[in-house]
Length: 208
Image (cartoon, rainbow, N blue to C red; front, side):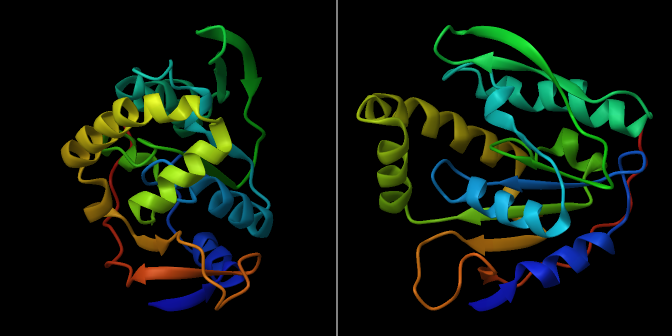
């Protein structure tokens, strides 16, 4: 595994094809607790890009299979056609959709979360990043973040993730593979660890 810098990745992002109107969209996908949110935040700081979290669009613990359609309908498709990208935030406590959020204009947008790298979204993506970590690391992060109540939700969420990743072939289609497990061998604020080499660049796909 090699260590790469966010600055280098930012330069790579700027060199990727534009597939969503005038915006380069970077998807950061992978299982819960793998480190997607931290990775997306650090990359976003380097490319000065807003971040859309798929968790804000997903309609609850059992609605993961609907996350990609919401992302495309509200954010990616409007970007591709020059429209206004906005989404309605799902309130997990009230179990209903709440207020609308505008997506700031920019040359780069990061979409982070499970299903952000789905096949239906692929035509809009300039880069697909897959973040992974061992199950025990991911589970511990989930419990630390969401409390003990998360344990009872883990199996439900994991089963949905596995089904989506198997159907979508997300990991196999990724352009960059990132090891999200903690390590003391690099500066996590400026560097990240690649789990394996990126695959060849994907061919251009026409927008609808």
